[in-house]
Image 1 (tube, rainbow, N blue to C red):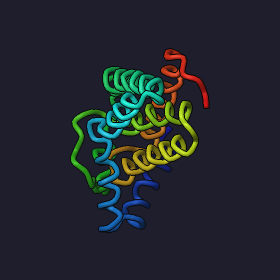
Image 2: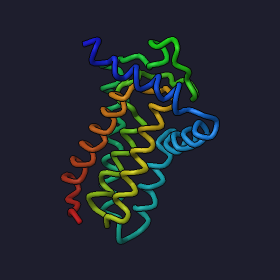
Image 3: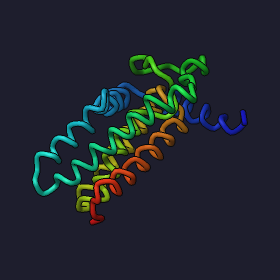
Image 4: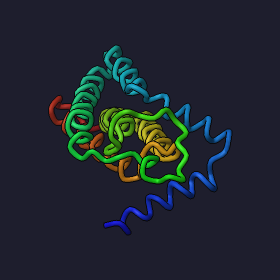
Length: 176
């Protein structure tokens, strides 16, 4: 099992030693900050709810985000209790404020994909695809900044997409 996680260590150290730089650090910090406290996802849900044409998408996105929050923050993080990478890897430099919760799965990534997956299902691709790209950038920023292991982000992607699918089914949203 230890060799499975070796690639995560190598990726985190590669990002730190070969990719990080002052400009990239600021960009990644800004991207990750968009989803602090679910801000971008909540804003997207509110914007969708206020538009009659996309109100059902907004309802499904809101349900998805609530489900993701409960599953990630109330169940999985505490049940799995995975420590953050900067606690395990003494040579990894954290570039963000130290989170107070556990690492797996990534809540930032989960929230972003919870909303983006619903937008992808229920909106034109000109909106849905960029939403997924922004969610992907948020997930990558979490790895780049040293806050999460890659598998934490992958877990967030899976939970976010799963809750998006469940919300889509629960609300009867039609696939576009």
